[in-house]
Length: 189
Image (tube, rainbow, N blue to C red; front, side, top):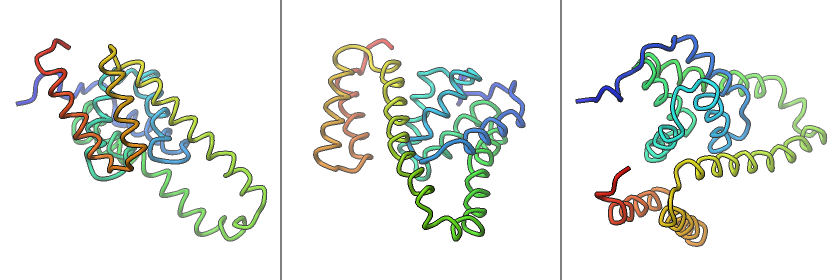
């Protein structure tokens, strides 16, 4: 049975949810983890729909789900705000800009610019910016959720394992969960 904390707040309009995620979807390049700082800025900092800790929990949940991180996050946040209709608005909002832009590019722009050196140069410049945005999101999230030496050491160890072994991300999550059970079970929040 869901607790009061899990029940939708019913205070945000469906239009507000839709418009917020339309903005997120329209102004994010790189997809995947590059969208995290944009979502975080909108739903945690600007709208205050979720806390930093809730946002981190949403990311943990969405990492274990099939599909796109942005889509899954938008659905989870929408559901928290307004239940299933809120999840649908979040999903529509975050995906509609990409679909529209991709259709426009495929149909009209790509054939005209595919060999344009200026367009290629812009994309080469955007790539490092995407990495910087991902690093910024990781840093902000780390400041909020990594407390104590054990959390920092666990994060560093899992990062090293993920980089050196190229193990599947789900295995890294499972390993982190098992270690968390051992280290943190029975501790206060």
